Image 1 (cartoon, one colour):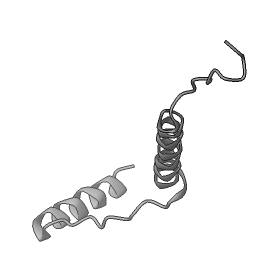
Image 2 (cartoon, rainbow, N blue to C red):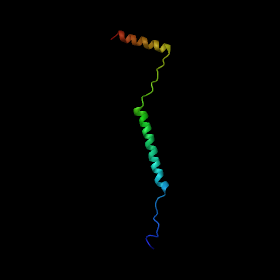
Image 3 (tube, rainbow, N blue to C red):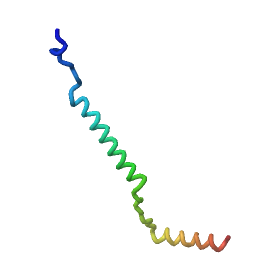
Image 4 (cartoon, rainbow, N blue to C red):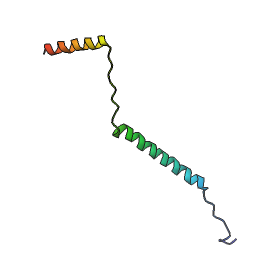
Length: 68
């Protein structure tokens, strides 16, 4: 057999491309999650107390201020 007539077997292109696509997608998701957790400012959630709870808290804070 001549060396030129034998065909060299290589991996199919999908076997090379699929891991690269998965790696790229994982990196993109990682960057998005990192951005959300580390860079983006947290959303401020307003505390909502009932009228009775607010009054009780105000009394408690006033009592704390009057007794150092």
